[in-house]
Length: 283
Image (tube, rainbow, N blue to C red):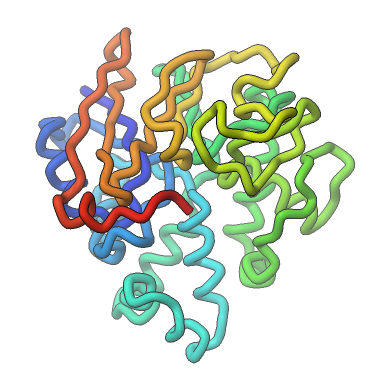
């Protein structure tokens, strides 16, 4: 049985199908982990959602910022939903919309596999979090997303404040800060305060900022962390973390990493030629 973690798909269906073929994925025995951002910009987000949902328990998905944005847009009135880009509209007005969105809303923010010894999130961990702390914080948000008041939460989901997660936060501020850590974080300062403007590769950030996995005094890494979200970082392996967003939607590659093979193995496929020609760079 093989378990593969896959970086940000973002609606890139042809590349996902080619990658699954290259992995020789057997749904009778194998499992696929998806690091989040299944949707937006690649052109085929509806079909990607249908494919991954159709895998049932053979697929594990952690939510990304684009996935949560789709869920938030779905809470708006129909006229507002009709104004989003055509790719997201195809989901919002699909006949199976409710099934797809309910399925997406009940995915995790953090997945940890004790046997494999890997943890997956979309963006990262706050520098002072250990695994147990991160699991507890993720569960708080997941409970709200799955609860009867999820619509109210999703309407207040996005914002850059508070930029620092701390245990004294309450209510929506705590939820928003937690979501920002798990789905939007790249660079932070020495205290763990997130900077949402710096999005380039390490070395391009302003003084005083660090990649979230390089902060001085960071908590001891108890488990290797697999993540996506940071296409400018590219494929990264070191310091107990593995970055798998290789910018397929921007003309790069779609990358998978095998988790059950001792030493990690990587397989990737190139973006479609039209995507390489139309690349515009990262959000």
